[in-house]
Amino acid sequence: MDKLLYDVVVLGGGLAGLMSAHEVASAGYNVAVVSKVFPTRSHSSSAEGGIAAYVHGNSDPNDNPDYMTYDTVKGGDYLVDQDAAELLSQKSGEIVQFMERWGTLFNRQPDGRVALRYFGGQTYPRTRFVGDKTGMALLHTLYERVSGLSVDFYNEWFAVDLVLDEKRVAGVLALEMRTMEPSLFVAKSVVVATGGMGMLYAHTTNAYINTGDGYGMALRAGAALKDPEFVQFHPTGLYPSDILISEAARGEGAVLKNNKGERFMARYAPKKLDLAPRDIVSRSMTIEIREGRGFPGGYLALDLTHLGESYIKERLALAYEAALSFAGVDATQEPIPVRPAQHYYMGGIDVDITGRNPDLQGLFAAGEAACVSVHGANRLGSNSLLETLVFGRETGRAVVEYLKKHEGHSSTSLEREAEGLLDEAYRFVKSESGVHFGEILNKLRQVMWDDVGIFRNEDLLKTALSEVEKLRSQVKNMYVSDKSKTYNTEFFNALELRNMMDLAVVIAKSALNRTESRGAHFRTDYPERDDKAWLKHTISYLKGNQVEIGYKPVTFTRWQPEARVY
Ligand SMILES: Cc1cc2nc3c(=O)[nH]c(=O)nc-3n(C[C@H](O)[C@H](O)[C@H](O)COP(=O)(O)OP(=O)(O)OC[C@H]3O[C@@H](n4cnc5c(N)ncnc54)[C@H](O)[C@@H]3O)c2cc1C
Image (cartoon, rainbow, N blue to C red; front, side, top):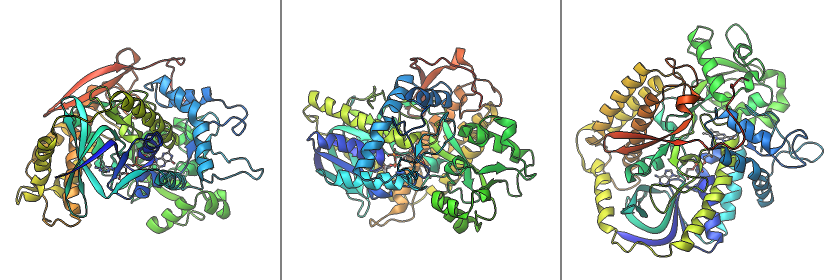
């Protein structure tokens, strides 16, 4: 097997991975970025609505970073580590101004100042945007920037597993997807920035590549996930394809209506209405649909028509195009059919405020793959793009500090371990019979949607756990029908499924364990938030077939829990 030597390997070419790589390469270290798609095709590129930031002199005169922190903490139902949220707010202005100087052209107001729009849960409007294609603009800017540094890109390479030297991460096993040829990347430190896991759910706004590979790799290596039970459902997936209709639509004034024409959010969030946080709106919509006030097939109406054709086409071009192409609806003339769909993962690889994982030396994580925790039990819209940049940078800087103290590579020969991991992975192409991976995948996605979804309870979660465990035991006997070595996408899908399966069992078990309702984790059998028992982070390990659960305290600075009304 080929051996490649680097100071740092970054897994993922999205915003978080590129920002970390930028910091490490700028400090003179040699860096490899490994990505299973060309970097600008990462899911960051599909972010639509915008990036939150407070910029002195260009934000609402009443706004300040403390309001931003408060909104984030309250939005996250007080499970947010407040020092992390403070850092996010304080660095927000600086980081968007960097991106602007580097080339991202944010929309402007007629007087030349940057335009702002409201996103859910914000006291003042503070989301900056490039039409409704903000992620694309940011990712292209950053990719261009990092391309100018000495970073080696391994595009269309699939990271299979972390390679360990005892309790230290010493490298990565990766396969070139074109040929299936393996390589061992030996590194002093690894940054996991592999993004989210939406494909775990039957309905998701996420790309097909969002299969939670980093969570699976980290769990198998012995690192914990933090708060794995917290999965975000976005209110407005386009019906029936689940393509995202950005929250920007409601930020610009679009209104949700039921089959009676009622603006039903008035019943659930009298002040914030359609711009209450996502968990609240998604639950309200589900209730409307379940109680028969949805449209046939199970959707509701998102009405933009009053905004006018030219405004819609300028500010919400993607929403307009998606509705027309994928639902045959002209949003300037009639409402868009929408329903909730999985959107974001608040849980992630357990890291501190510098991106460092406490379980394995040399392991760092950033972006959606990580849980810092800055979003707590529910992320506010437009805070994720911001997190990828702010904490991508913090992580890169922490890696540089780490490298100053840990200069050498692991002295152990890592080949044997890598060969073992490779044999495990190749098993799926060698195996001729058993269960086809596609069958397991479809069942898994449906179970997660039905039983570990927007509303949960003990019965559903117990069913889910036993179903997932059954499916997970079938993964050992899983096969793919394509046996070729050239772009064998079926084989890589099977590896992705293995990652999703390891993650699914941890989510289901952790959700069953948390007997309260907080943010996106809503238990009909425990409908109240219980700060006495549950104001703490879940820390979950996967040991063979067992999920081991522990806890960590939430960091408080200035904001005490209060009732979360909007
Ligand atoms: C449709 C949509 C719209 C959104 N809109 C917004 C918005 O307006 N504002 C906002 O703040 N947030 C938004 N979000 C959320 C936000 O875009 C993401 O959380 C964020 O971009 C994630 O960035 P990331 O760098 O962590 O991961 P990603 O951008 O997802 O990148 C992951 C990278 O990891 C690589 N990778 C994964 N697995 C492997 C593997 N096994 N081997 C090698 N490489 C691998 C991929 O190739 C990719 O390069 C949106 C999300 C979606 C799905």
